[in-house]
Length: 132
Image 1 (tube, one colour):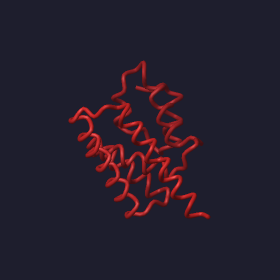
Image 2 (tube, helix red, strand yellow; image 1 turned 180 degrees about the horizontal axis):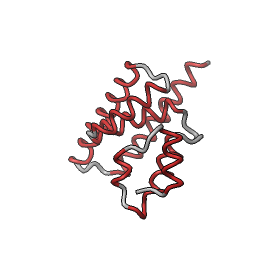
Image 3 (cartoon, rainbow, N blue to C red; image 1 turned 90 degrees about the horizontal axis):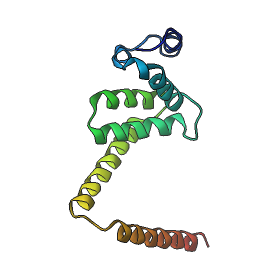
Protein backbone atom coordinates (compact mmCIF):
# COMPACT_ATOMS: atom_id res chain seq x y z
CA UNK A 1 0.00 0.00 0.00
CA UNK A 2 1.34 3.45 -0.86
CA UNK A 3 0.61 6.84 0.65
CA UNK A 4 -1.87 9.22 -0.94
CA UNK A 5 1.02 11.36 -2.20
CA UNK A 6 2.73 8.38 -3.86
CA UNK A 7 -0.59 7.14 -5.24
CA UNK A 8 -1.13 10.50 -6.96
CA UNK A 9 2.41 10.45 -8.34
CA UNK A 10 1.96 6.90 -9.65
CA UNK A 11 -1.28 7.88 -11.37
CA UNK A 12 0.42 10.90 -13.00
CA UNK A 13 3.35 8.76 -14.12
CA UNK A 14 1.61 5.55 -15.18
CA UNK A 15 -1.97 6.67 -15.73
CA UNK A 16 -3.13 4.32 -12.98
CA UNK A 17 -1.97 2.54 -9.86
CA UNK A 18 -1.22 -1.04 -10.95
CA UNK A 19 -3.08 -3.62 -8.86
CA UNK A 20 0.16 -5.30 -7.82
CA UNK A 21 1.23 -2.11 -6.03
CA UNK A 22 -1.57 -2.82 -3.55
CA UNK A 23 0.25 -6.04 -2.57
CA UNK A 24 3.30 -4.22 -1.23
CA UNK A 25 3.33 -4.17 2.58
CA UNK A 26 2.54 -0.72 3.97
CA UNK A 27 5.96 0.06 5.44
CA UNK A 28 7.58 -0.56 2.03
CA UNK A 29 5.01 0.94 -0.35
CA UNK A 30 6.44 4.42 -0.85
CA UNK A 31 10.01 3.14 -0.79
CA UNK A 32 9.23 0.45 -3.37
CA UNK A 33 7.59 2.99 -5.67
CA UNK A 34 10.63 5.27 -5.28
CA UNK A 35 13.03 2.50 -6.27
CA UNK A 36 10.89 1.54 -9.27
CA UNK A 37 10.41 5.17 -10.34
CA UNK A 38 14.01 6.24 -9.92
CA UNK A 39 15.64 3.24 -11.57
CA UNK A 40 13.09 2.74 -14.34
CA UNK A 41 12.16 6.30 -15.24
CA UNK A 42 14.86 8.40 -13.60
CA UNK A 43 17.85 9.87 -15.33
CA UNK A 44 20.68 7.43 -14.63
CA UNK A 45 23.92 6.32 -16.25
CA UNK A 46 21.96 3.86 -18.40
CA UNK A 47 19.79 4.83 -21.33
CA UNK A 48 16.15 3.69 -21.49
CA UNK A 49 17.20 1.18 -24.18
CA UNK A 50 19.89 -0.30 -21.96
CA UNK A 51 17.56 -0.45 -18.96
CA UNK A 52 14.91 -2.24 -21.00
CA UNK A 53 17.34 -4.79 -22.40
CA UNK A 54 18.83 -5.49 -18.98
CA UNK A 55 15.31 -5.96 -17.64
CA UNK A 56 14.44 -8.36 -20.47
CA UNK A 57 17.59 -10.39 -19.86
CA UNK A 58 17.12 -10.52 -16.08
CA UNK A 59 13.43 -11.41 -16.39
CA UNK A 60 14.26 -14.18 -18.84
CA UNK A 61 16.93 -15.63 -16.58
CA UNK A 62 14.55 -15.49 -13.60
CA UNK A 63 11.81 -17.01 -15.76
CA UNK A 64 9.36 -14.32 -14.65
CA UNK A 65 6.52 -13.84 -17.16
CA UNK A 66 5.40 -10.62 -15.44
CA UNK A 67 8.82 -8.98 -15.62
CA UNK A 68 9.45 -10.30 -19.14
CA UNK A 69 6.21 -8.76 -20.38
CA UNK A 70 6.88 -5.44 -18.66
CA UNK A 71 10.51 -5.12 -19.77
CA UNK A 72 9.75 -6.13 -23.36
CA UNK A 73 7.11 -3.39 -23.47
CA UNK A 74 9.57 -0.98 -21.82
CA UNK A 75 12.19 -1.89 -24.43
CA UNK A 76 9.81 -1.39 -27.34
CA UNK A 77 8.88 2.05 -25.97
CA UNK A 78 12.60 2.88 -26.04
CA UNK A 79 12.90 1.84 -29.68
CA UNK A 80 14.47 -1.58 -29.16
CA UNK A 81 13.86 -3.96 -32.06
CA UNK A 82 12.51 -7.49 -31.73
CA UNK A 83 15.89 -8.79 -32.92
CA UNK A 84 17.62 -6.90 -30.10
CA UNK A 85 15.14 -8.29 -27.55
CA UNK A 86 15.78 -11.81 -28.86
CA UNK A 87 19.53 -11.26 -28.60
CA UNK A 88 19.19 -10.05 -24.99
CA UNK A 89 17.25 -13.23 -24.15
CA UNK A 90 19.92 -15.34 -25.86
CA UNK A 91 22.67 -13.59 -23.90
CA UNK A 92 20.79 -14.21 -20.66
CA UNK A 93 20.41 -17.86 -21.62
CA UNK A 94 24.11 -18.17 -22.40
CA UNK A 95 25.07 -16.52 -19.11
CA UNK A 96 22.76 -18.80 -17.15
CA UNK A 97 24.08 -21.87 -19.00
CA UNK A 98 27.73 -21.10 -18.25
CA UNK A 99 26.93 -20.05 -14.69
CA UNK A 100 25.37 -23.46 -14.10
CA UNK A 101 28.42 -25.13 -15.62
CA UNK A 102 30.85 -23.13 -13.45
CA UNK A 103 28.86 -23.50 -10.22
CA UNK A 104 28.05 -27.16 -10.72
CA UNK A 105 31.68 -28.00 -11.32
CA UNK A 106 32.86 -25.73 -8.49
CA UNK A 107 35.37 -23.90 -10.67
CA UNK A 108 37.81 -21.93 -8.53
CA UNK A 109 36.73 -18.27 -8.60
CA UNK A 110 40.26 -16.86 -8.32
CA UNK A 111 41.51 -19.07 -11.15
CA UNK A 112 38.50 -18.08 -13.25
CA UNK A 113 39.16 -14.38 -12.58
CA UNK A 114 42.84 -14.72 -13.49
CA UNK A 115 41.99 -16.48 -16.75
CA UNK A 116 39.37 -13.86 -17.56
CA UNK A 117 41.88 -11.06 -16.95
CA UNK A 118 44.34 -12.78 -19.31
CA UNK A 119 41.63 -13.13 -21.97
CA UNK A 120 40.68 -9.46 -21.67
CA UNK A 121 44.33 -8.44 -21.95
CA UNK A 122 44.74 -10.63 -25.06
CA UNK A 123 41.65 -9.15 -26.72
CA UNK A 124 42.79 -5.60 -25.90
CA UNK A 125 46.19 -6.36 -27.50
CA UNK A 126 44.49 -7.82 -30.57
CA UNK A 127 42.31 -4.72 -30.91
CA UNK A 128 45.31 -2.41 -30.48
CA UNK A 129 47.21 -4.30 -33.18
CA UNK A 130 44.20 -4.11 -35.52
CA UNK A 131 44.01 -0.33 -35.04
CA UNK A 132 47.64 0.14 -36.13
